[in-house]
Length: 391
Ligand code: HEM
Image (tube, rainbow, N blue to C red; front, side):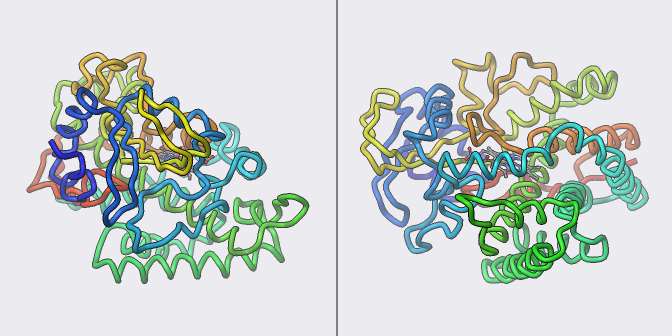
């Protein structure tokens, strides 16, 4: 088994990555990859080591980037500046500034409008009869929700929905980059406007934050908006699509959820998060020499935590390959762990719940309507196209 196949998006698209990770967990759980197109790095595949590394941001820093990038791409432009990529002191300031927006009190305000967006998407899908669940349902709610958080006027949201689709789902690499540039330009105009006339939204909050007595530069506000937008849309979309596919492939589990939605939804959402684990990896850099799983990690070494692998570790989850919507306990790492634990956790869970509730309540019969296409990426996993027939 050659662990370097994990560097090929096709391994993730074709579903072969789980075989590789299972072998690595057993034979080589902390594996060194020699440099090539990518820098050299350690692959961490077990729950224990991934947890240990993510819980210690002083020894294992996210500040230089959390995604494995080909050497040709150079350093991450968000390094040290966005919430996810901030060193501990700066991270605390930024996290405190935005955390209130993700608190239950604020989320309650959004619940009704989330349910309305989900209801409309499902109604329109039923009327159409045949849909691509990814584009027609899963991609819609997360963009609407993040737009509401960022205070993006409803009239501008269709543009954001279209750019987000082009930037992350469709087209060639050049088309994706161009669409992403549109998003960054939009956020730059928005941030400049909100700095001068703040409103009740997250962009305004970011323009008012001070770090070491200085307001955040506009570029940093834009990078933070972008990472909230990307984090808040891509992962929810892929978890929803992966969750729907898992429910179709496990009809008995779907029945359990249909029979007692309110009783089973909480454990079902966590199991969908574990089983699908849309964020494929997160990365850290060692700030000092350390022992990780018996291997000697040097200062400056990169460590890639493969989250779907940690979430199938039999030492943590009995029958890890079984999809069980009543699984408990379920200490999955799909949303991370430690100080950088996903700030959108409760929001993401509400969104997944709202869509599943509407979908299962309104559509009595759902079947696959053609081949499922999967994303070809090292960063985000799950269906790119999920054709369904509904009645
Ligand atoms: C199913 C949906 C989601 C998944 C699977 C997911 C996954 C993750 C993971 C694994 C991390 C930790 C990364 C690390 O430790 O390096 C993270 C952090 C983060 N997520 Fe999410 N996420 C989801 C939804 C959201 C939503 C809805 C938002 C916001 C609208 C969001 C915004 C963020 C941000 C800003 C961080 C960085 C937090 C920090 O560094 O303090 N995510 N997410």
